[in-house]
Each structure stands twice: as C-alpha cells, then as structure tokens.
Image 1 (cartoon, helix red, strand yellow):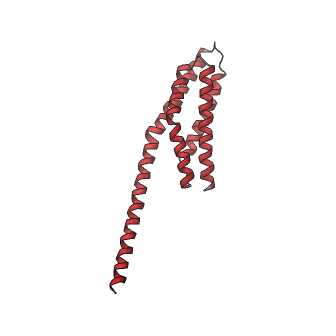
Image 2 (cartoon, rainbow, N blue to C red; image 1 turned 135 degrees about the vertical axis):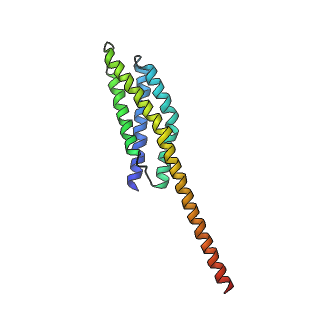
Length: 152
C-alpha cells in the first residue's frame, strides 16, 4: 500500500514538473511557441484526470501498472523541454527535430488518455460489477439461510 501511495505522489510530481516546464518554455522560447502552447493546452485538459487518479490511488491503496510508464514519459517530456530550451536560434535542424519530438510527446499523452485510460476504465467498471454481483449473491444466500432458521 505504501508503494502505491508513493507511486501516486510521484505521478503528480512528474506531471506538475512537466506542466511547469512547458509553461516556462512557452514564455521563454518563440521558436517552439505553437508546439509548446499545444502541449500546454493538452496538459491543462488532462490535469484534472491526473488529480483524480492520484486521489483514487490514495483512497483505494492501489496503483495502476501503466503508471510507471506514464511517469517515465512525463520525466522524459520535462527533459525534452529543457533540451529544446537549450537550442540556439541558428540551429534550424535541431529546432525542427525538437518540434517533432514535442508533437510526438503530445500525441503519446493524448493516446494514453484516449485509449489506455478508457480501457482501464472499462476494466474497472467490470471489476466493480463482478464484486457487486458477488455481494448480491452472498446476500441472497444469507437471506435464504435466515429463512431456513426462521422456519425451523
């Protein structure tokens, strides 16, 4: 359980660091402004989902298996932002490569939340339904047992 709480906290920290780096880069670098603004917009839209994931991980004492990969992706994204900030204005090829990497980062984040999170959500709803059915069955068995005791 402690490991899952730490994992949830690491996820939030990694997300917040990437968000701060993107926000800072958007103010400092004109060369990637459109890429960074697009990434910032995506991060802003998914930030509430990250907060919910952290909150639910703490409440349930669990951590999704995909969280580690996402944390690595967020940390790599922060390093990419720092790399982009260090590119000199006259290095056009490096700017182009960095721009492509920023677009790829954004695409992978969007993919994670549009596909992976939806699959996890579907799985979790099936787990919840299975547990509810199990509780319902046990309640029926308990009521049947009480009826038998009451008629004896």
